[in-house]
Image (cartoon, rainbow, N blue to C red; front, side, top):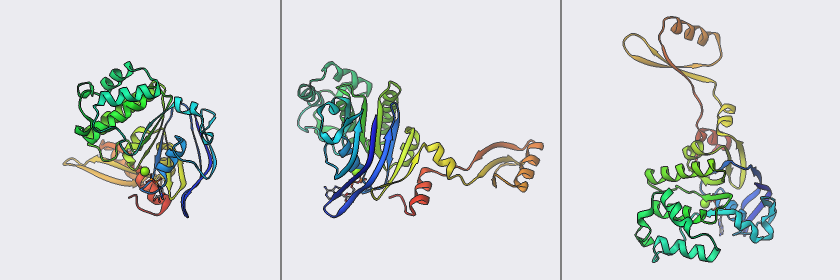
Length: 282
Ligand SMILES: Nc1ncnc2c1ncn2[C@@H]1O[C@H](COP(=O)(O)OP(=O)(O)O)[C@@H](O)[C@H]1O
Ligand SMILES: [Mg+2]
C-alpha cells in the first residue's frame, strides 16, 4: 500500500530525513516511533503530498506521490499534528464544509460522529472543545471520503486517557474493517498495543524495524520471572532462562507445587530504543 525508497529531505543544511526506506502492507497498522525531531512529521507530510522530498521514491497504492497526483488524495485520510479546524464554526459546519470542498457524502458525518461518541456535540463551536474532542473531530473528518489508508501524526499526544482510549478503539475497529493505518507516535505503549509493525526513527534514519513481538524476542534478555508461594507469602524470583541452576530451581519449586506463575522478562520497546540508539527516548 505504501512503498518508500531512500527518501531524503533537508531544511537548509539541516538533514531531516537521511534516506529512509520502508513499506506498509494492506491491512497493517504501522507505527513510526521516534523522539521529537526524529523526522516523523516530515515523513508523513511527504507521503501525504504536503511537502516535497529532495530525492527518493514514495508510492501509495502504486501511485507516485512525488508527482502530486490528485488520485492519491482520494485514497488517503490525514489527521495532522496540529488542529486545523475553523474554531468559530461548529463541528457540523466544519465537517459540512469539508464534504462540500471534497465532494464526500454528508451522511457519513453523523455516522462517524456517532461511532466516536460525539453526536451530541455536533452543534458545538470548535473553540469550546477540549483537545481530545478536537482530535476526534479530525479523525471523523479524515474518514468522510472513505479512504483506504489513514495517516495520523501523533494522534493521542497530550490527550486525556479516555479520549486516547476512544481513538485507539476506533482505529482498531477501522483496521479490522480493512483500513491500512500509518501513525507516528512517541508513545511506546501506544505503538506496542496498536501496531503490527513499527519502525524506530532516530535523527532521520530508520534504526530498527519489525513487529513489537519480534523486536522484543530479538532483544530478549533471556531471563524469566517466577512467582513462588513459599507457604507464607508470594515471592518473585528472576532467573536466567538457560543454565542448570535455573532448571534445578524451577524443577524443585514445581515438584513442591510452589510455582504460581512464570513470565519471560521481555524488554519494553523503550528499552530496545535505548539499546539501539544509545540515547534516551525523550
Ligand atoms: N520547516 C522547517 N524548517 C526547518 N527545520 C525543520 C522544519 N520542520 C522540521 N524541521 C527540523 O527537521 C527535523 C525533523 O522534524 P520533524 O519531522 O518535525 O520531527 P518529528 O515530527 O519527529 O518531531 C527536526 O530537527 C526539525 O527541527
Ligand atoms: Mg512531529
